[in-house]
Image (cartoon, rainbow, N blue to C red):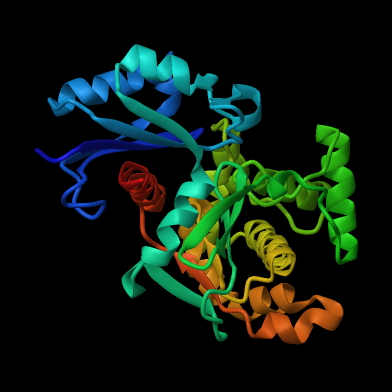
Length: 337
């Protein structure tokens, strides 16, 4: 009988789960589900409910988590999750023989070498160097980063918490934005400008600075919700009716995303390409494509390194569950070794 692998992509907003047979691999789940993370008082309860519904015994589990995994633990306050996670306690409570927590961007990175052309959308052309380092940056609820390095036989995924690095500015408005975030949050990071958490900060800074008027219909919609990000994104994509304030917000978001993607590419010398993941990049894909020239300009704006940057391709990951693929491949690789 084939080994059964449980993979999960545990995010602050939602958790994706899927059960795979090691024999058939990560392309054909036996069963899968998506649940609202905050609805569950514990992660073990969330997983137990899925396993019971699946009606199978799990042999191995790999959970990709939105946060740094240190000594098998993830802290809730750092990860934006409603609970802390400890893989030893989870293994005991769930009674699974082999269980591991890994960072969600590490999981996404592990999937990248196996993605097909249908899983990627080209945003910036270039040429890749065989076995060159690859960078992955993913704006979702937060901002995740990772990279792949070739070890002579295969790519190794490396995690990063670069999304929490100090936000830099490249124009007068971004100076204002840094100061605004510093004042409202006590610390200005890339995540607080380039994520689901960050988009409202850009919007509020633009509104406060009177860069564009807020339409009455938009003010009414925003007043009725706790999280303004979906409404801002919908206004950007639909443009019906148009909202200049939302368009400006998205343009600045693209500038900052492109700049930080370029920063990561420089730091790891990503001659193998840059990959944009995360739910926010996927939801804003039509706008990213519309503003492709803007993205490329901000990505390449690196002084004496601009020529090297022009050669680095950037692709958007459109596979809807890339972290599950990576987590499953990690489980299969660990079993083989």
